[in-house]
Length: 173
Image 1 (tube, rainbow, N blue to C red):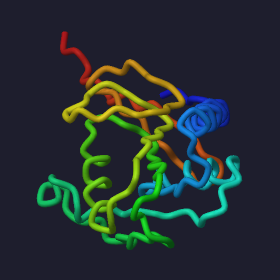
Image 2: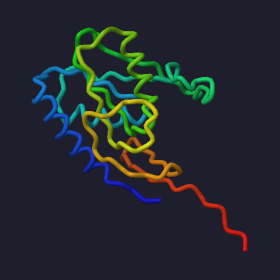
Image 3: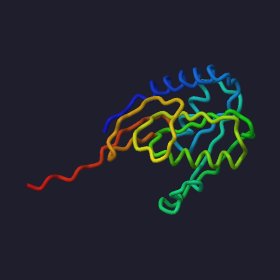
Image 4: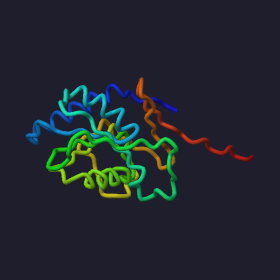
C-alpha cells in the first residue's frame, strides 16, 4: 500500500481550474461536490478559488444505475444545492474517476434541478476502467492502475489517497 501527495494534487487541480475558468470566460461558477470524497476535495478547492456562492453537495446514491446491486449506505446524506443550477456554469468535483457511472448519476441529478449552461468535471485522480464516455476537464493526476488495484480517498482531515493492493493468494507448492 502506498500514499500519494494530496496537497500537490490539489495545487495541480486548482491551477487547472483557474486556467479553465479564465480560458472559458467563466467568472461566477457554482461548485458542486459528490459525496463523500468529492465534497472533501470541493471544500478545499472552493476555498482556494475564493468562490462566492456556497458549495453545493450531491448524494447520488438513488441515481446510480447499480443501486439494486450496491444497496443503500445506512447514512445516506441528502443533496444540497443552495442556488439554482439553471443556466449556471457548474464545476462538478469528485475524488476518483474510474467507470464514469458516478458522474453519469450526478449529471442526472443536476439536470433534475435545472439545465446548467455548462458542466466542468474536476477530479483529483483519473484512472483507467471507463465504462462510459466521460472524461474530466481537469484532473490532479492520471494513474495507470491494474484492474485489481483500487485507490481510496480517506479524510476529511487530513486527506490521504491510498493505493490498495488486494492480497494475493499464496502459491501452493
